[in-house]
Length: 348
Image 1 (tube, rainbow, N blue to C red):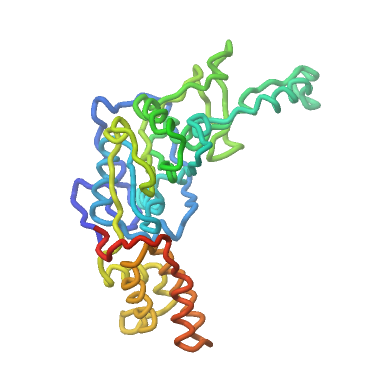
Image 2: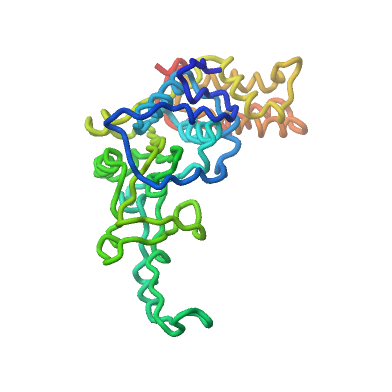
């Protein structure tokens, strides 16, 4: 379990609390003045299991708190299966920060995709339709631009919420080479313009968000400015290097693979304890055997923790009818190497 100092807002213990309300004022250079303040939306975790079962390291807990205090993005690196994405859900769950806004990155994604979507073709089609029967000025053309604007995950996270939202920018290393630098301006300003609104005589509109297509938020003067800078969790598998200007504006943490059988067993017990059962507080012998096997094989190539969980789940059920040697063969089949490069069991 991660240590919890009195200064830490996020404790990593998976117990929900209102500690975010004692977060001190931001540094003067990271103060944002958006408003009026919006309430935190209801919690609706897209990954409820990760939110309550993820076990962050002490280093991860410290760096999450650093990102919260400094109002800086958190760049999370590590091998597949180390829980990079799960960290975002764990923070949102413990601190009561509402639904995690998820932005999956591909090579085709641009900054605009994360900020907002505008549908001019549907608007053009709808421009000729009269008002519905019984409405005021019946027969007049309806042209509410808010019907054709929806904020993306980044754009929604930068709304003036009273509490920070959690934004998961997943696998940023897969992005186009320009995206990290494009994000810098938005992260530094804490704001962005909706160009389609700034060009209008009346640059105010109520638009849809990533949270909802029915509940609207008002954008004034064509600009969105945050109030509480979001906790931006950017994950990377280490497939590329980022520009120094980008790195120096991020808080970074590298998630390591568990360094011992005991750490692996603790992870398995957290995720699958109720499934496989225990014997006097210990995992069953067959489960411990698979954990040992996983730990031994890890030096021969890249393996991910979720492969271990999959193998244990499958073998637990297969053991009800299969011979032990068949179950061991199944475990190896469910845990193929993700690469042929030796990693070393200590993950140095």
